[in-house]
Length: 208
Ligand code: SAH
Image (cartoon, rainbow, N blue to C red; front, side, top):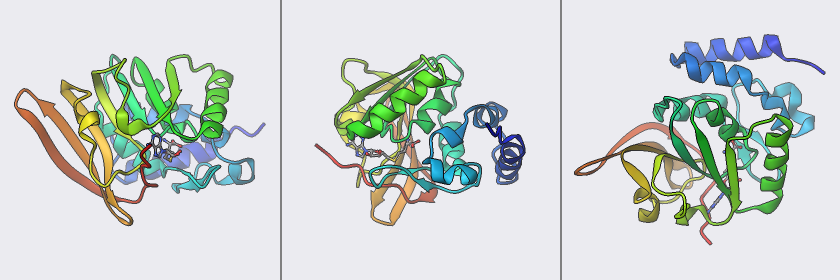
């Protein structure tokens, strides 16, 4: 089994060069074997800084975008984090190294089954998944310290905003078609503060 040490080191150097300075985020990217989350035919491309297709016409995000989103969550290790769009499970696996527990929702069963298998294989025990419509959030688990969307709604559903704790942070791609930005939302005592940080292109959030 190839260990991709060289490719991993090259990827983290690239990310550093692109301004990712958070060493805990870079270390999580070095620890999580991305090659396990991509289709076997694409394993040799696992450590390129590129998004790749996964099953059911979905995509695993570009490592730089995973890093930016993870960094924007400002995790200390103690948080409960809700993710919408489990997909391959890669982003959830990265988060699992940096927070207390990840709650991840996916609407496509085959993807969820595969992601759960990988978590078991990698002995990642602090990710809980469920099948369903992420636009509704996870009311039984709410409120969350952090929420991350890895599929893009035209605008952030208020149900999800309401599941952020006061003092908490949400990171989400927002917009229609190609016209999306990565938005960071902070919930304060007085309401919500919003900042656009990066143009992005995610698969759409599909409601229902
Ligand atoms: N975080 C994933 C990215 C997967 S792509 C990874 O690291 O691989 C986005 C995922 O969002 C897709 O798997 C898609 O099926 C899922 N998705 C889209 N709309 C959704 C919804 N309403 N609820 C839950 N998941 C949704």
